[in-house]
Image (cartoon, rainbow, N blue to C red; front, side, top):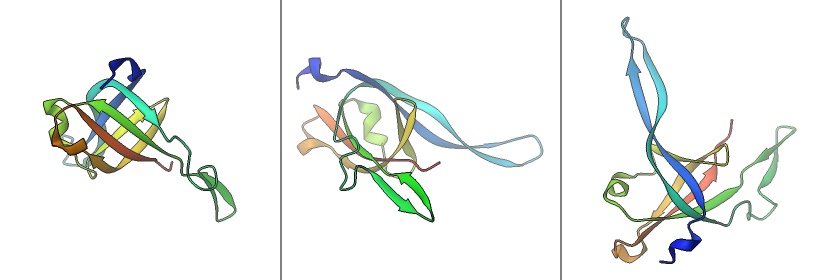
Length: 114
């Protein structure tokens, strides 16, 4: 892996549920891991990543993030984690451990709707 291509910083966040003193449950996100990554395929879906829904234009752009392998990435799932990049949140829709050689992990992501 050419580390010179890891030119952007991404933050992987983990979904958390906190309970206050009264017993109310609150969903939230906490930073899990921050690293350098290579971004490819941002907004390359068939219509520029945008679609008309209910009279509004929604951006559903996707991106692939390739990061160096580390032990913390073994815990990643598509359900409880997301990626922050460029002020936007991306839901992880697929994980590729790249032949399990412990060199890199590719995260296939789609921009989160807000």
